[in-house]
Length: 155
Image (cartoon, rainbow, N blue to C red; front, top):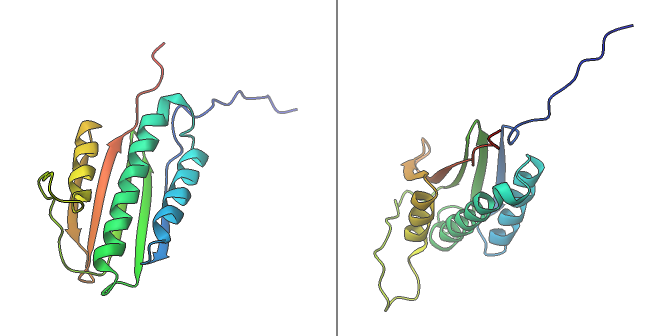
């Protein structure tokens, strides 16, 4: 009879990469946010320890997908969000086919919009992460943010 081996429960989120392609329409913003939330929870990021991280990631996804739908839909009928869970970090990126590279606008109380990327940068930096905009090989762009996963319990 084989000996029983004790298995250890994962000490953090399960790693992997998931892609969520959606049409470049407004209804895709909540659809993508819900898909990312469900995947984060399925990967082990439920509970109080991960709540702030998940909230930050969902805000970032909402802003990036909303920006892509609003500004890139004419040149990009599809927007793809990629979620990557690594060892100690989580990255979300949103890719579209529009070559225009967005810039974070400064805060202006007179404007009612246009501060989504500024918000993404602020949330990302406050969480100890990094974000950037890069060109794709096909001539479009990908906007991404990578945030650290909170450390495990110290015993």
